[in-house]
Length: 276
Image (cartoon, rainbow, N blue to C red; front, side):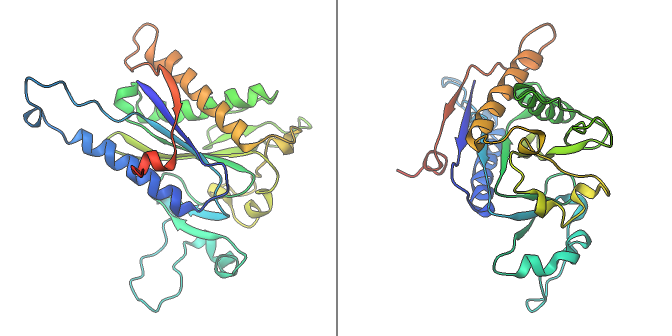
């Protein structure tokens, strides 16, 4: 098995990536629906689609998970329906130079994505990789910890969701460097992480109570003393760390149940959509 990596180098729309993610999850779910009756005995089994990681940076956007979904409102003349955490910044979401808002089915609560951040969506069949839902979250978190270590930063996994770093001064509380939120359907995963690379997202985070954690602050590689890092570099390091974690912990060694990832290959948006 190989892992496909789709990296979008330019800042893009959240909707564009959501559509790509939906295309990939639909293919994996469609493969799961195949039954032995649909495959002739004389033919080879139909091979499942490869797992894919999409890495990108969206335009400024606030997203909510299942715990913060807005109240339903079917009136065509009603104003934008927002969850309580975003009501205080309604004007920011409806202004021309503000942020977009998108409710999602991922786990967790309200967070921000935008320039200065590397977002990675992992579209995977957990069973094929030998992952339980809890192990999947741990692989995402530990992969971020591995990337941080490469920049000389100690990452922390705590009882709170995401990946944290200790305060630079050694005093105070940890700051959040990466948000984690996923969605599962029939063991097919979607969504993933938002990794802060520069300080650019910090103003946007300060407008909300991110992930429902009152009094906790966000930080970034730059905020931890590592400036000038490119988003694409962090994306490559994250994908490499993810593969190493899967192969080391779930595909090799005693008791491992997952398939090994033999390599990573790059794909384009046209490859995913089947456009010539």
